Every structure is written in structure tokens, then in C-alpha cells.
Length: 261
Image (cartoon, rainbow, N blue to C red; front, side, top):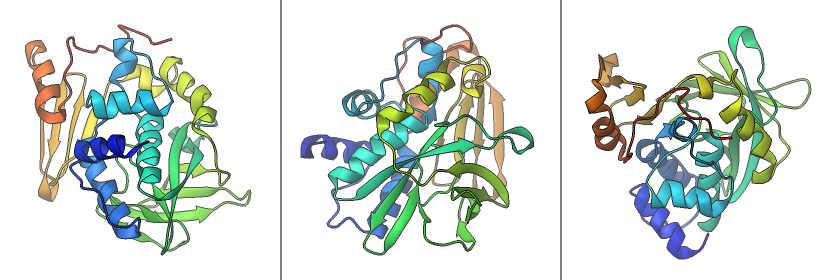
């Protein structure tokens, strides 16, 4: 990623070029990314291709001002961080599902980011998660606006990420390349058993809570746990994507209407 592309990315998330690649800047960029770039799987239900390479990711997230799911969001964020001087490693994870069952290999992509003060787990692609990076080298509880988190090593040498005591995903510690995640991405966007093919979501963090559009259900949460939920009429959906997420679409995505394959 060259300087021009990095500056465009920083503008996309409302940030300016930082002076040094330290932990404080990483935390600020992490939060701005979560508030600016939505976690969404709209491409799956619009029949759009998902390409795990730097330029297509930049074209989508920065150029088209869209969002994406973990492979896209963390893949692109890794490129930005590297352009700003960080050492970044892509890590593969398996997500915990019902009854504690683990998902497929390469089910999730997260980042280990090295700074002068130590390594951090950064993840802007897991939907509801920590607002700030988590200390990779700490096994103590870490308090975050998104909950209480803990990293716990397994007997096999992996690392479980827990939120409020509940395991979220299991990370392998071996660094991977973005291309390694293509099979996991393909499975998640095509398998009838993937929750991404069976649901429709567009969600982002806000300064006071979170806003989510699931199909035609708009949910806005605010300070103190306040929650406003309502069903949108068909003619309101595209305007809601545009108003709340900056996502401009020419047609409404519908579960099962399209399959990118």
C-alpha cells in the first residue's frame, strides 16, 4: 500500500497520518475503524465477488466506502498498519459455535500487531468484540467497553479468546498469508450451513452504542442499554443503508436471492 492509498484509507476512517507506530495510535485507529467501516455480508446476497487481495479490498472498503467480514476488514486493516510502520501477522482462528463446537479451519482472520510496548491482538472484523486491541502477552482479564476479555493458552499451544467468560474463537499462533484464507472465505460465503449465507447483517459501532440492520430490522442501542428496534418498509431499506452506514446500493440485498460462487 503506497502513501496515497494509506492516506485515502485514513480519510475513510476519519484519521490523520500518525507520527509513530505505537500502541496508542493502534488503539485509536482500531476504534475509528470500528466506528467507520461496517461489518457486513451484503456481497454474499448481492452476488458480488469477494477477492482477498490488497487492491480489491481497498477498492471496496475505501473506494466504494463499503464494509465486509473478517477476511476483508482485518485483511485491509493489516495493509494499512503495515503502511504506517507496524509489523503485523495474520492469524487463523476457529470460531466457537453452539455447545462449544469449533468451526472450520480459517473460519476467522485476526491480527497480531507488534509495537514498541509489546504485541497486541487487533480485530476489527468480528462484529461485537473489543473496542480496543487486547494485550497479546497478558493472560489476565482485560476490561474493555465491549466486555471483559481474557486470552487463554490451550494445551495444544493455541490461544482462546474469551469475552465475559465465554469463548469466542481459538487462534493458531503460526502467522499466515492472506491467500491462505481463501478456502475459509469461500466456505463461509457459499456453504448452506454458514451463518453468513443464512443471514443478512450490516453493523457498526457508534459513539454511544451500536447500530445494526439485519434484513429489514433496524436496531439502535445507546448509552445505558437503551434499545430501539423497528421493522423498515421495503422503500426505507436502501435509505437506511445510506444514512446509517454510508453504503450506497442500487437494490436491496435479500437472503438466498443471490449466491457468489
